[in-house]
Length: 69
Image (cartoon, rainbow, N blue to C red; front, top):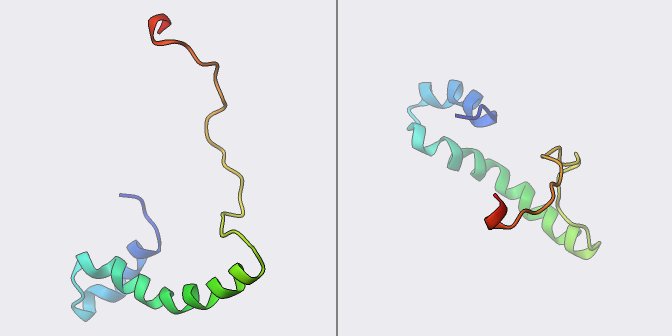
């Protein structure tokens, strides 16, 4: 399991009898108003919602036909 903010929020949700399957929806419900408010501004200014950090994935490799693999 990838540890993210939902993992840490379990410390608060568990004592309040929130079932583990509802941790993510409860987190999203708290974020939904800010996401909703940001959308019109981003559309009006023609801004894309994207990560601020570059992708550090694997480097591009030459394509090999299946017969050569």
